[in-house]
Structures are given as structure tokens and as C-alpha cells.
Image (cartoon, rainbow, N blue to C red; front, side, top):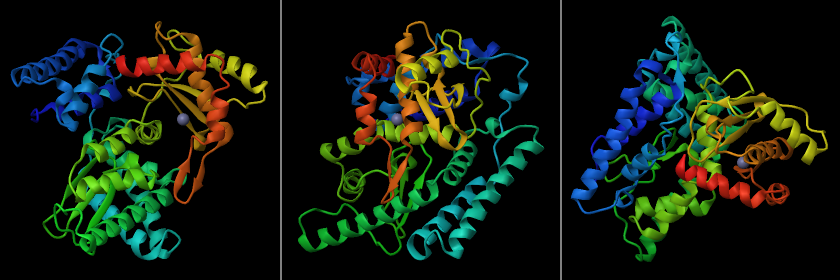
Length: 403
Ligand SMILES: [Zn+2]
């Protein structure tokens, strides 16, 4: 059973939370969120099911709406007219499509270091510039982009930052390879039943910034499989579970493998990194409860003997259910979620998140065979040196569930 409009409602709410809610629209916004939740619950009750028995997209949308903290909304004052402006870019979809095709070309034929690889870089840079100029002409900035324009802009900026494009391409190649093996093996062994015929030669595979975990259209040639950008750098087992689900049909076992991954920190980290490409941050380290300068000083003293050079520190207005902090190496910046800036969040929990992010600064990211090694065993050993490690972890888990 699918609930019409629920996923759309959750996107609308997410968009609104990212740009902030104009102070005079707060009551309507609250009503909209609560109304969507109540409608869902009513429909579920009528069908004699619980909301957590809904299919994945609806269930996630429902969970997201439930997670919105209506008491601590990111409110913007009237005067910030700028942030109420909504901008979308025409023809962004076709440009996005072209770039996806170029990426596929580079992944399967020429490689990142080739001339087409260079051309791809230029094309992405040019598209970003076009979008920024488009915003500028409308007296806005990319932070005003909404919906698909925003997703695509963030995605393009993300691909150009760090070593993301090579990692993106490696994941694509790996995914393609696994699909090929899956299709070939099943043909010969006849053990698994292929749900839909796949012509590997005409199959298009894309990683994209989108809400669903994957989307596919098979059967009709040429087939298309789109997977969520968050799977970039995932291990083979995770990619294989996705493929099995797509090619052979859903099973609870494979679904749980990739679903587990989709709630992991690695996955959330990529999504947040993308969102932060346009995010406007608060311009002060002083929150309403916690002060990031002080938090940093305390952590630096206790755990790094004051040897850590101070990164830029900001609070992020983006509300993320399961991601509380993020370290951006390219800007040497730690961004902390405003949902931590609350009375019910003790200081040591904020310090723990800061400590975790500073460990990212210390350990760095390593790219090995196209996989990001982010939370290495050495990282985890260091993380456990935090004095109230278990309590802090538990507190964050509870917060992720209820915030
Ligand atoms: Zn981390």
C-alpha cells in the first residue's frame, strides 16, 4: 500500500527546513507536517496496518515527518526576503542527463585521466557556473535553489570536490561488473530466476542525488538502473544486495543488507556533504546553548594536548536525522547540526561529536580501490578513548530516533 503524496510532502518539508521557515508561515508549516502525519496514520489504521509496515519510500517519508522537531524550527525573519526566494533552473535535467552520459562514457571506455575525462571535468565546471549565473540573474544564490535544481547543483559541486569523481566512477565500474557477473552466472546455473531480462550492453547505470535508494526500469530496452549517490564507495556485498534485489527480486535478506547501509554514517555523510554544497551556515560559533569555540578548546586540551590546529567552526541549519557533525577537509571546517544546540543535549555529547569530527581531520580520508576508508579500525580505537563513549553514543542514538 502506497500513500499518495506522502513522499512529496516529505520533500517539501525537507526543502523548507533547509531554506528556513519565514516567521509568519510557522503555523501553516506545523499544520502541514502534523496534517500529513495524521492522514498517514488514519489511512494505516483503516487498512489495519502500522506505519512501519508501509513500503520503504512511504515509511521513510513518514519517519522523516515524525522526526521533524516542531519546537525548534529554523525560523527566518521577515527581513531575509532573499531566503524565501525559490529558484529553479530551466533545462537542468537535460544538462544533468548529458553529464551522466559523459560519466558512463568515461567509466566504461576512457578513464578519468583521458581527454574525455578532462572534458567531463570542464563540462561539470561549466554547468555549475551556468547555474550560478542563472541564480545571480534572478537576484538569488544557489541556496535559493529548490527541488531538482538544488539536487543537481549539489551533486555537481560534490563531484568536483575532494576525490569524489574518481570514487564515483570506480563505484559505477564495480556496479556494472557485478551486474554483468550476476546476469551471466544466473543464465548458466539456472538457479535464480531473473525477474526481467537485462541487456548488459545497452544497460545504463547511474549514481544520482535522489531520495529513493534506487530506481530502475528494466524489461524495455535499453534498461536503466539508478542508485542513490550515498552508495558511492560501498562494499561489494552492499552493491550485490542491491543488484540481487533489482535483478532477481526483493528478498528480506538482501533488502536488510542495503537498508542497513542506507542508515549508516558513511551513507549519511555523503548525503550531508552534498547538501552542504549550498547550505548557508550560521555565522557564529555561539549557539543558543553551546559554544563551539569552547567545545573545541575543551576537546583539544583533553584529547589532543592542544596540538590540533583550529578548524573553522559552524552550526548547520540543515536538519539531518542521523548525522550530527561533518568535517570538510577542503575547507578545514567542522559543521555541527543545530539539533545538538538544545538544552536536552548535554555538553559532553556535543564534545563527543566534535571529537569524532576532529578525528576525521587527524586521520584523513584514504581512498583504497575506490573505497573511502573513513572509519578505519584505528579511527574506531581512537574514538573509544572518549571518556563517556558509551553514554554519548547512546544519547546520539536516542536523539536520532526522537529529534
Ligand atoms: Zn564519521
